[in-house]
Amino acid sequence: MLIPISTFRKVYPTADEVKHGAPQAYPKLLDQAVDQIREVLGAAGGTCRSEGRTIFSIATAEQQVEEFHNIVGKVALATVGAEFHRLAGGAASA
Figure 1 (spheres, helix red, strand yellow):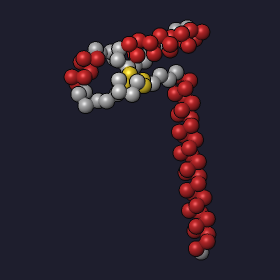
Figure 2 (cartoon, one colour):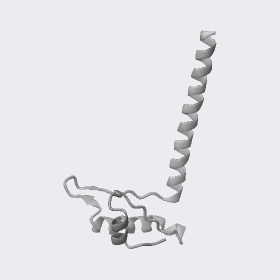
Figure 3 (cartoon, helix red, strand yellow):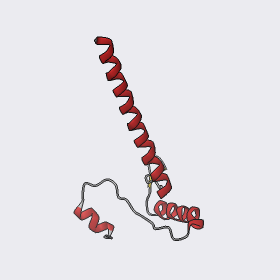
């Protein structure tokens, strides 16, 4: 679903972020497309004036999948660690 940003702001006045998607038709042009998107967003006011840094991020589908796997891996590690701690603690107190 596509809606104008002005409509989005009326419907969601407290939203502090928006996700835009850009379909990738030509994989060989990905770097060029990312550069163009970064240029357009920067020209559209995508920088924090007081700090001079960008206030948006760009991630490819591949980067999003990698981030998802990193998060799932950390959750799995924490779960195994907590279970090990529970079992070790239970054995020590028996």
